Length: 397
Ligand SMILES: *Cc1c(COP(=O)(O)O)cnc(C)c1O
Image 1: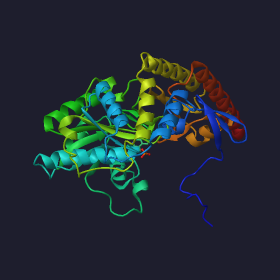
Image 2: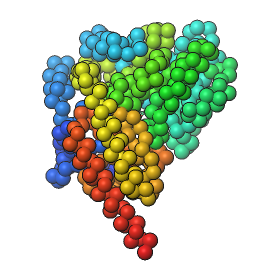
Image 3: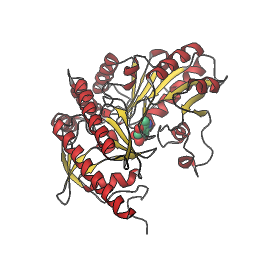
Image 4: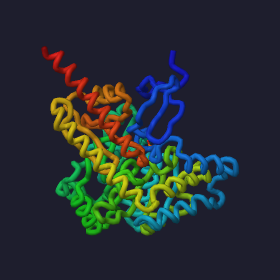
């Protein structure tokens, strides 16, 4: 008989009761170092006092009123995001897929509202992940995820990442824009080259296309900048954000330039929950921490420390690990043996991680993780690698 909770996930047999910083305690009292952060989402770690207090205080006042009314918390969060980024305007929703749906609708509406309704196509990239709704699945383009769900939403083409010729070849009379992750998360922590992002910007200007970025995973400080595209020194036209933006509270956002955002006039798009007082209070509490002076510089420094440690591990265990990937506290290790096996060995040492495409194990600790946590994680990874290496040796004999 089917379980009461729909069994659509392969869950590890671990349940957590409470957390503190980068640490989690299971219901049976075991302690784990969380370098998965609930898939790069618990940006302030667990049990963060500022965030928890803000949510609790707001919950006691008013949680939800709907977008039929003004929401001061949303106005404040939007104004802060506009002040800190390329964007002129922000739409709030509840998840990454929903942010990308809003983004895709904005791109299409921008074209149709300016007399080019035939331009609804979006060029996406191999290895992308944009979500699980029908349109974002088509944008993701993974046949395995699309299988069995009927005709896929039209208008999405896929070309190799970091290949300008392929992008140029894909442009036709139907193209409205491009959608790219500055750092692919699910796809295996592959970065778009800085020069590639700059060339895309120039190309979008040349052809009048909308440059759209999916910063659901790499944004909100994870790369060491508030948004990862800042490393390329470019301004996109629209981006999606979610995951870390609410520190674990469900919140998504679309940040847009005025020429793109202004076409979603009343009646064209909406959401009941999106941007409610409680979610936006969480978003403001997260920004309080991430925008504090020196915080992002610390993310960069801790990211370098983690990468250095990972590179030493790779050098010491070439039969297990192949390559270090990623930016800031969005690191990955491409493995030689199956990444799932490495992840299980890490968990066995008390370190939680997440796998990704291309046989990669993701290391995405809370942005507030300490140097001591990083050192401890590296010790756990080394012990796991030693275990895997001696098991492999025994099997070979
Ligand atoms: C997780 C993710 C999404 C989807 O977000 P959900 O909140 O799961 O809908 C979209 N894009 C990227 C890059 C992601 O990492």
